[in-house]
Image (tube, rainbow, N blue to C red; front, side, top):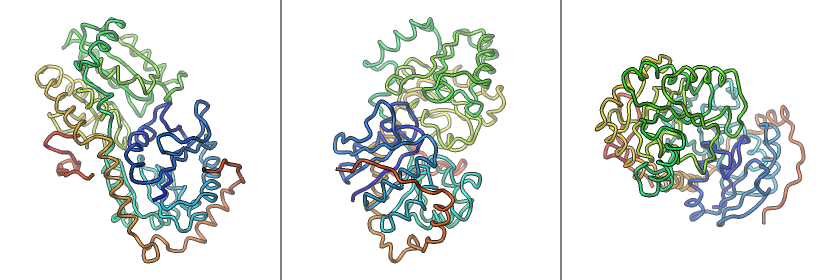
Length: 436
């Protein structure tokens, strides 16, 4: 099939600025293009050309920044270039405007956040979007359940496909390709004799690194060799200071343990900090769809302490590759869970090894691509003339477009499913034979 993959308006592909969705797309493209002709439509960035073809994959980049601007350019491009299937990432509000200019294309969605919440899309539009798409792929059962609870009619179109990680790039610190990097980083920052706790993520209240910092004074009384590394900034490559960042810094200055704050780290280098660490802690306070740092920590052979928020617990096999903090708003719960892990070095080693096995077996990009290809294969067989996916959308689409007029834009012309066991207690999926 001739397939168009439409990214979001926030960050470019390849992920030169990072981003979970962008990393996901870059990870699966090498496998997808072997089976189909792929065009990736995304947002422009000063370091990338507006149009190029790399390894058989065609990239087109248009202005973005705001949703409305991006939507106008996306629709204009789709109107001029026919595709058999259009796969849209995380923007259900693109579906109806695109349907107006591509009435015969099959459409699928890949949902990485809860963008079907009524605050983000009105109910009438969301119901029409669900009728128009042939499949909705989600990155966690949590996201699928949010959609299902709001719109039960989506049930038959939902499919969870967990994300992946490059396990040849994210390696344990004792791997021959990482041992010297681990040693150099730790020595350079004076933490070579420490048990290094790693946080990696945006510095925002939702991500909650302040809870980890508040837990450290008590942990330092129990363990005398701790150090904290905080990797991240306010928004990917943006390094500015917010009130929250100032608050985090003030807390960190009073800690009795060394703290290394790296700021933004390039996606091409962040694996080095995972290799330098001994324990990974995710402190999410919000209903996180499923943070991809979990996959990276597993690939790096790190035991994980995460929170019972959103989809995060779905990749944790309790006491096998990590533990879950049930009350993440309470720093004391982090103290107790981290004490449990840190007090047993044998357990830490076992958790790290199990996580690595999961990463190299279940959470491979090849598996993610295989699962998505399976969905596309099913969609290819659908006869739109006999499905609800072609229910008339004339009034709804025209209403949406009338509310958000599309301006003319000049653009260049375009020249394996694996068996999963259900953890019924948490309603999450994992492979017990230790895969990821």
